Image (cartoon, rainbow, N blue to C red):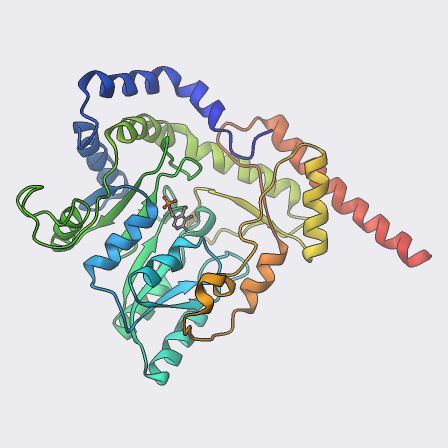
Length: 387
Ligand SMILES: *Cc1c(COP(=O)(O)O)cnc(C)c1O
């Protein structure tokens, strides 16, 4: 069993992907081919935003957004403590100070209450200027943008939606990557919509920012590539990756997103009475980048992971370490806030195999083994009490 079965996905899509890749080779338009512009237009229509600017990867997408807003030294950027490193790395790389904020236990996403506390604390300390909230759509579920937007407006901050894991998610009819003032995603192979290498995109409704993003991603270009009017970077999406994504986006829209939601539904139905299953807010839809359960403590989590490995069921711990405890941030003068939920989650979380091509048989095997381990755990504990 695979944790995320990209080989099986390829088997399903091979004919179309082979054709698309071959077209790029025949045309040899490897950089900035038509496929890139076509993909951007399709992504704009899907997400319902005015501008999609593809780029080299999801990390560059975040950096490009911060460049547009001129984020740098002396700026505070609020980042959830429970996320992938890039969400906090990019503000630090830009010279700003990441301020880590706790998350909600139920959704794993940034806590509005902790966010507001952190903003108030930064303002009171008076050393940093609050500028940006990086809201991450963790494991596929959009963050609570209704409340985050209220806070952003109240304190005059930008929202940068890190939708690297959130592509395809929704709140009501609105799709992920449309909630930020600028939003980003990643096409890393294992993300909900992945390509065959690195890739990413930035989304915004702001025409002026879109023009800046298009310039920054190609060496700060002006009218053409050899007219350089600002310092930028080299971060384009390859034509080959765009061609692969055109095929994958079709499958994603037509059935993959629905298929992962079916797997999640099945897991939840089987497991909700024995373990804490992920909660999706009312009116929210997840794209299930991960299906993460919460065990009672680290011992139970690690024990279950070992047990499932013996049964040839792969699992992952996303994430074993809070952002604020990463060594890379230790030398920064980071603002201290209460991050106890994240600390606890890192010890208890476990992600189960999840992808659109998972057979019902495999889903059932995972659920059965999780239940078996947890019920045997109860037996063992009783036995310990007796002796
Ligand atoms: C994967 C990921 C990124 C970075 O994307 P890359 O394409 O790997 O650079 C950023 N943020 C989050 C939350 C991610 O999961």
